Length: 252
Ligand SMILES: NC(=O)c1ccc[n+]([C@@H]2O[C@H](COP(=O)([O-])OP(=O)(O)OC[C@H]3O[C@@H](n4cnc5c(N)ncnc54)[C@H](OP(=O)(O)O)[C@@H]3O)[C@@H](O)[C@H]2O)c1
Image (cartoon, rainbow, N blue to C red; front, side, top):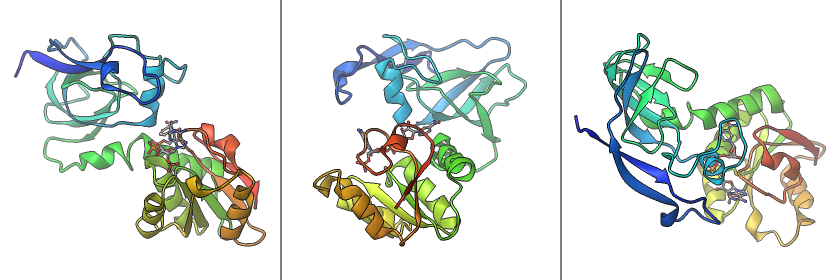
């Protein structure tokens, strides 16, 4: 094994879109594990919306990154060395290993063993539908939105990682599902590939006033609109819900 661990570290907080000068690829020493720790080779890294909040220094459920820190992100990796009873070499784990070739995992909340050395684990799915975005969509719909048959569910960021799953769960519950997305192509994907009943391109709306009308025209008369997550600001009828992972209702 190499004694070098490549990492992408934060050099400056981004302004606008993240740019090449905001981060730097560096070579750090390979971590040495202690008792209760496992060394994980990160096979896949997820670029989730939460990463941006950590780069920006915003308060959240985890501390913001400091300048010079490796960029934190969700990972799927393989245990290559272990002094932790919870893992054996070859185990596949999801963790917050970040943009590093290797990271150290503990037997704690942030690392989950998802397969053993002989299991054929779909690593991509572990970062998506079985990862935090899938879980957010699941709990947002099952525990908060609770769509009922005959209702219309409106999903913002419909083509995104969370929204696409949220919409499919709502469909499974028997609701009619209307997506909101930022391009015709995203809307096509939402309808043709994710099975949404309809999708509105928010960039072609001429004013905020058109939203209630457009929502109503795609929903059944007298139905309820339930909105789920979005990554940022949105001028939908349910804009208050667009800033948080959760769901809310509005009359259509
Ligand atoms: N609490 C949790 O554990 C958890 C887990 C996962 C996700 N989330 C939250 O759920 C939301 C969606 O996450 P995701 O992973 O599904 O994101 P994503 O796949 O990256 O989707 C992001 C989409 O949001 C839309 N958007 C709306 N307003 C935006 C703005 N001002 N700037 C950038 N994008 C904007 C864009 O789609 P359009 O152009 O099509 O509108 C964008 O493609 C985020 O707020 C995220 O923090 C929370």
